[in-house]
Length: 146
Image (tube, rainbow, N blue to C red; front, side, top):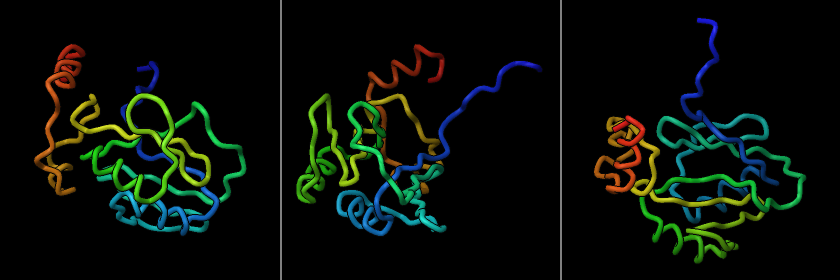
């Protein structure tokens, strides 16, 4: 043994917001959210076998380059919902927005990227019909992962 540990994924990301209840309401206008649980100053939203945490107490200025990448089943629906919710859409490739607390978020389609959920996780999320694009599958095969 004696080698370095390999990072095999992300369990969760904690996103700092001004108010947890406001964040749940604001994000809930554009995305389907399933509350996993709460603790003092935090709320946890299920993403299948991962989760997103909203943590109260953001005090830094808005993010410029630092961002969170969310993967969705339908980018067109996400864009429409974000526009209807009055989200601040920001420039750059694809769909990007800034939440009311200055967090910058990029939204990408599951089909278009290498990230893969196990079939049983997708099925449990009601997303068993999601598939990968040929380009994403090719990237996975080139890495020996597909």
